[in-house]
Length: 259
Length: 248
Image (cartoon, rainbow over all chains, first blue to last red; front, side):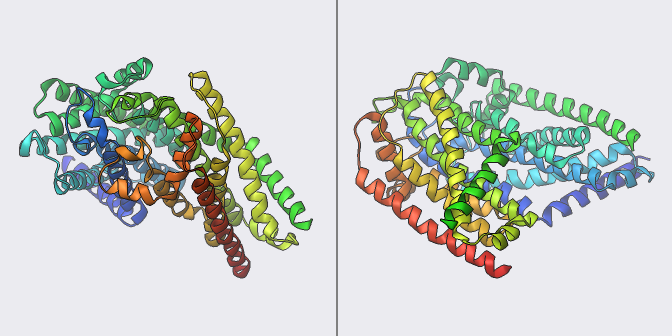
């Protein structure tokens, strides 16, 4: 049973990866756009490092955490849109007629998302190294960063899958993009929380879980081994992943029953 | 006269579509407000960076950029609408029905201008409510807006599909963000300083910020550049229209 389950997950993960790879826009855009933003923001905001209390003298190192989150955002959208297309085209209904277990579908979909996340993380890390970013936590930190980004990708991919299964519409999933975008921008993305001057913005950034994900990634690049930042980052990432996978599983069961 | 009546018909249709469809109207209103909040709120400490010299403060500094951005992306959104019209076949019917086809481009541009005026009014009211002092002229901004509309119009008329979206968005995005978005030009370092120095949007942005600060700078150059952009993109859009006509 277990072997068959793994095979089912593998087949669907392969399908998910191949489907993404066959659409160059789905591969290139999520890689190019964050790099472009990184280039613009890291040079445009370099003078912010002169502020007293700024944790590093390289805004590039500070901003390198952001593409990881943007990658997660694209993972959410891609996973959700692909799954919604499967629902809209009737693929999910046909799959429900086979002996394939529902959870294998979710696992396969998320496997594909994580493969894409792994490629993205490798690109961001390589870009950082090529551009001269010194990873404060060293080689071990890079490995942890890679695992952390996979965990974030898993959580956000599951969130996308949940949205797709709940709504059954690719358009509805795409419609959630601005909401996630707000979460990304109203965070400590561009400035450390203690240096955000506007009080309500600082409070919103403190309440925003995305701030802790960014700070977890950033700590490995800028600070080194910061137990508090990592514990908060991993804690939030695990919470998002568990909640999103649970919600997606329940929605999948409902969706297959409806079918 | 016939050109104007075509323009009026096209503009009325676009405005009716936009203002009766929340999914088209709300993003163009929300996005500038969101960027204004994120930039002016999250980065307000930037005005304490040594060498940052802009008396009205960081909120006003970002307001000008957000206004420009809303203008440029208003044009891009209009381009999406044109692309949708051609995808649905309406664009071809429009080409058959219009006696003077240049009125089509004029109509789309006029509608987008009205649409941006609404967005600009909302952004300005919000900026004033959060305590920003506003002064000076916005003619440059209108110039940039027209340029953005005509750029998007040109691309949309050539490609006639929503898949042209990234082609419309990316150059506008690059042109805007390769300007002094977060700090004045003098504080930019490295390659971005060189790029921003030669980016025409920088002149428009700095002139807008000068107006807001009550100390206009490089006004003549900014007006000339905005006018050149409008002229260049008008030709681009009209050539796109001809391309659409040839494609049938």
